[in-house]
Image 1 (cartoon, rainbow, N blue to C red):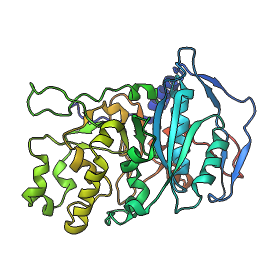
Image 2 (image 1 turned 90 degrees about the horizontal axis):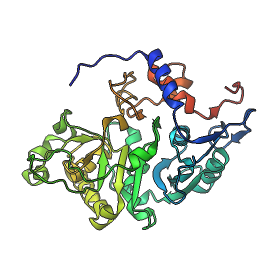
Image 3 (image 1 turned 30 degrees about the vertical axis):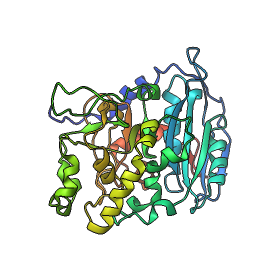
Length: 365
């Protein structure tokens, strides 16, 4: 691996700006500022209507790309920016259909969120699903950060149940990402490559999920000594080469997910966690327990993660070298929070062009 070399942010901004101009989508951008929508029940935040993005001539009408994300008051601004970035950079924006998961126990309610999204993206194809926190709340253990204990973080486990059976594949994305490449490229990745086969002669087999994986990470640190000292538990990784992957960016085969009842497998590990405390970090470890060593490896360009810094304290991270298709502010720091506080990290400036939020007194950019 090449040694890390810090990237000049001004140079990177120029590079990405040039890259953003190369998409094939047809865009209709208003000549005058869009109407500002007052979202009173979301901390008086305001959003402008997004530009209207249309398909290029080469797009097939029925070739839908399904994207799932969560929606809640604290991350709505991030979700809106993420959607905006996806539409801006895909050549067939009208072919992207969004499945938004919202908690039925929080305000605003899913019905209100539907109206908010429709006001920001009038022509967007989407549905807001009502998620019952009670399905998973009793299984959630304390984590190193309170935000990681939110039941909505576990909604991705239930996508196979919530989405219609006709939806056989979905891209799951966290709300703290932006996409700077055509989402069709991620959608078209075949889920047929084992992450790290034990033997070079081992044939490729299809998997239920695909994600960028990081085999240089210390995999053992994600589990406690209670886990590693218990052979009946740790043997789950026997005859595998498990690697860390981030569940904030996943391509999921929902047919395999449903057929193999992966939801119940993850829930089972969460129940064991309640009794034996085998990990410390939120919703990630049960995914590692079920899928570690059984993930189709996707290019790292599709998850430049960790831009939110440390899980406990404020810190800035630089971009890793190499091409970038998706930036991910996983960690404690979120770009909209740091920007509003006047203490942004350099990488937060890359998120700003997709932000559709405006203060009442802020001059429209």
